Image (cartoon, rainbow, N blue to C red; front, side, top):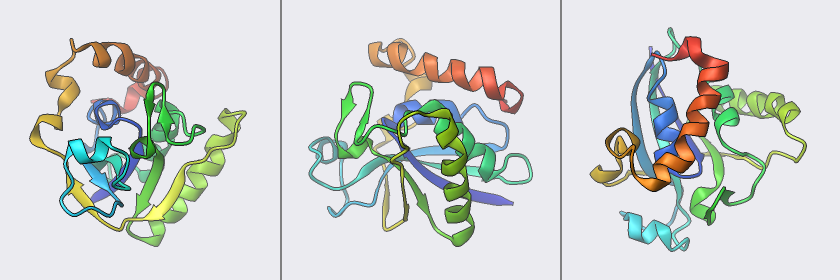
Amino acid sequence: MKRELILGGGCFWCTEAVFELLKGVSDVESGYANGHTPNPTYRDICTGDTGYAEVIKITYDDSIITVDTLLEIFFLVHNPTTLNRQGADVGTQYRSTILYTDDEIKEAAESAMEAAQADYSDPIITVIEPLDNYYKAEEYHQDYYRQNQMQGYCMAVIPPKLAKLKAKFGKEMA
């Protein structure tokens, strides 16, 4: 059955690049969630004043890959212990968040976060919250890494995430 999961783990180019490689994932869309400005743009989001997080909306087949596996990968490929920051990316738009649309996803997120804490010495600060609103990001953000692998930011930040994915979840990759 097709399901959706919305996650924010820093720059959406980075998380999109990871989740696009998984068996059972049919689409990964970059977007903005849980802010207060109608119809935000990337320029708006970058100010840090809109309340939005950069997120990805993952469409997946739960008969091939489970929400539990997706959440385990989420906690592996970003640092969930830093407030409003992933590496050099700083601001509320880069916060670590799991946005749920039903109790099943909320409970899975809580369990995954509890399990992931064993992998980190600092407390996980990921916010698990209901999805309030979502806007698809501009087209040039979609499939960004696939189209811009030689861009400096992509070359520096994304390959280590992909290496972590391959090392632990190689069998889950398409």
